Image (cartoon, rainbow over all chains, first blue to last red; front, side, top):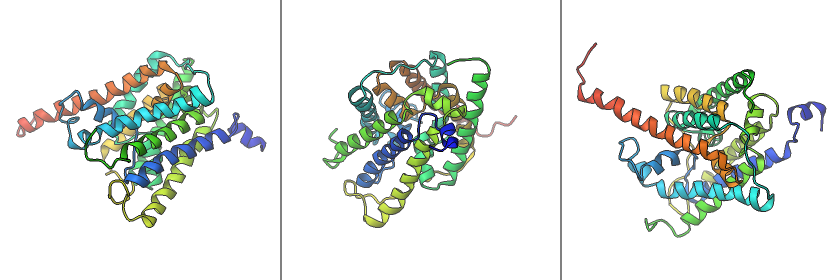
Length: 159
Length: 154
C-alpha cells in the first residue's frame, strides 16, 4: 500500500469496503423486493408504539410497520452474530465507559428522531438518494461528532 | 403476523437484515472504538463503510426503478429517500452528532454490536429508546398547550 494510504488506513481498507458493500446489499435486497428503503432508527419509535399511546408514537405509519421493523432489527443482531460468533468466533466487549454509551445513546435517540434519520437512513440511503436534506444532516452530524469526540479525548476520557 | 403481507415479505426482511448486520460487524463499525478512532482522525476506514454503502445504494436507487415496474412483493413503485428540509433536520443532526461523538454508536451498529456479544452496548440501546421516548413525550406536551390556548400572547 502507498505510505499515505497506510497512514489513513492503519488497519487496511479491505474490511471497511467489503463491510460497506454488505451494508448496501442488505438495503438493496429489501428495496428491490418491497420498494421499502429501510432505515435503522424508526424502529425505536415504532417499537415504543406497542406500549405507548403518545400521539407521536401511536401513528399509522409506525403501527403498520412496527412488526417488520422489529424483525429487521433482530435480523441485524443475527447478522452481527453470524460474523462475530460463528465465522470469526470470540465475543467482543467494548471498553468505552457505560456513561458514554448511555448518555450518547440518549442524544442519538433524540437526534435521530428530531432529524428524521440516522447513519443508515440519512448517511447511506439519503446520501445515495442525493437528498439535499440528508446531505445537510450528515454534514452536520459528522462535523459535530468529530468536534465532540476530539473534545472528549482532549478532556482525557479514555476510552 | 398475519397482516396480509406476501409470504416472502418477512423472509426477505430477515435476509436483508442479516446481510446488513453481517456487514456492520465485518467492517468493525459495530465496535464503538472503531467509530471513535475515525472521529479522531486515527483511522479513516469508516469513510469507506458509509461512503461505499452510500455509493452502491445510489446506483441501486437509479438502476432498480428503470429495470423493475414496481416491487414484486408489495407492488409499490421504487423511489428514492427524500425528506423535507426544515429546522428539525439541523437541530436533530447536531444532537445526533454530539451523541455519536460521545458514544461512538448509532442505531444499526448498536444492533449488530449486540450480535457480536457486546452486551455492554445495551447501555446505548437503552439510551436510544429512552431518547426516542423523551422526544415523543416532549413533542406531545409541547404542542398540546399550544392548540388548547391558541390566543395566548406574552
